[in-house]
Length: 314
Ligand code: AMP
Image (cartoon, rainbow, N blue to C red):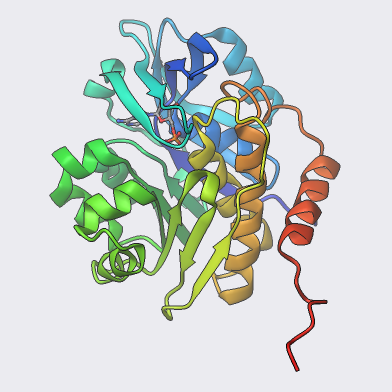
């Protein structure tokens, strides 16, 4: 990798989660879409985090952001409020989960403000958060080169119009499989993808948990990236955001406009970062990785899908 580090601004949730899996539970697990995204993208780009937390947010994570080189001058700390909280339980298959509780807390009155210079960031990711807040940040930017966004079922349910307005403005939409079905009203994923593209989405990534991820590019070409086959998935929370962090981080680092080859490589870096994420609770495994570890896993993915030596039937 080269050494230029472009500015990649992210707005999204910064949270304290309560995670229940079939084998383990953590009650105060730092999460949030922007947290996972920032940690994963920090290996590729200079991340600028915009969000809000309350007085209860752990100091240790603020320090971890600093250690990862994440610029948190846009992370407001509201002394009056409590951090956004989410509680979820994973099903036996670890791919499906049920949201048990969502407390917006400080997000209810959040008015995102960009510190001076942030609006000129070349790359922007609107991580999962209310679409109206995504829009507010988007509107403040001065012509970013590439904009990605993510969302989730709650916003498809309660803020569908705002969401649809947003998706047509960005370059890349990342969304998980169930959400793609919900947004499009189509069960078949190919039909769902085509319907979502018709909303004005330029490039679409459908995240499929342990089944990997599917890309549909602007020309309608498909590409699939696997997930790493793991014996134990410890905590899948944040895998999608880490995927987005690796994906957007790579594109920012390369400074390229999305094309066939760059999007495919980004899909693999996304999968690499997601594979680390699920190996631990919270961002435990995403913190303190070496570039060598990231590259080694990239090669593991390359070996996993390499059939260039396969013999064609005569
Ligand atoms: P993922 O597993 O990639 O879908 O991301 C999980 C993270 O999303 C958790 O750490 C939660 O704190 C966060 N989250 C859950 N619900 C919401 C929501 N409605 N808005 C924003 N972030 C959320």
